[in-house]
Image (cartoon, rainbow, N blue to C red; front, side, top):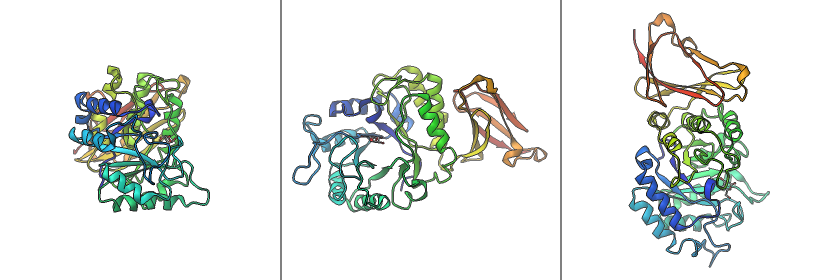
Length: 375
Ligand code: GLA
């Protein structure tokens, strides 16, 4: 059973097809030595382009040039560090980059992944036959993984086709990609946020809305790094993904990450909201002119979190954002207040009774954790 949304690292955003076992081992080491593991990042995931271009005797084979010691040895290495191993296949005839894929081979491929000690399978949707049934494709792989003898998390990736929020949970996936691919520019993460912010009511144990891998800290380099974002934008992007309960899968090269963005990926307060044991989905409290969003999320232990995001791109819309606790059902005559702490800086703002007001320029966010204080 999968509880809170997954946290990990994936090779695609930075490395694309330029992957090999040495890289994956170095990344594994960094996840441990730089504090990512301790912060909750758990899965090391190899994306597309890991296999030979053709099956051998009907089997998927890891490219021996890139992975000379084979996938089982790499998996053992990752497990020896207390981390979990993720791999990639696709529901169509070929993967998105043209490698052999699992259509018609689901049960044997799942057994192969189990033999390699795989814990997580990203399952893509390229080259899927027009006559095929997408819902069944994910159901088949979910059953194949269950039949493999190993518990393997199914991370579905059909980019939102046929509205997977409505059916992917029932087909056995632990998460589902809800949008097309992210790129390392502000418009890309903003558009994904706006398209999904009201589509997360179902985010709960068992199946989460995956808004794609993080671009935090990529600075325009790597496979999806077309323009880059500012550090403030990367923080806003990370806070959005954490607050909405999307899997947090790092896409940057963590061997070379600058301090500011490393700090963003390790923000304890934001991760505590993401990993809150109650696993409640967030909800929209209000949307204001100029793309300013206020969200709420019930947390465990008498607490509730708030998020303010200014996703606008122009200053002239004004920067004031506020919530009235009345809108949340906390009426002033009740005498109940909220003791507010900043989830990014850790600053304690004191107890508030009627509401909260903040001025945020475009690209900024404020995330608060509130503890209910009875009269
Ligand atoms: C699709 C997916 C990406 C990545 C690539 C690999 O585009 O959405 O996340 O896995 O395929 O080819």
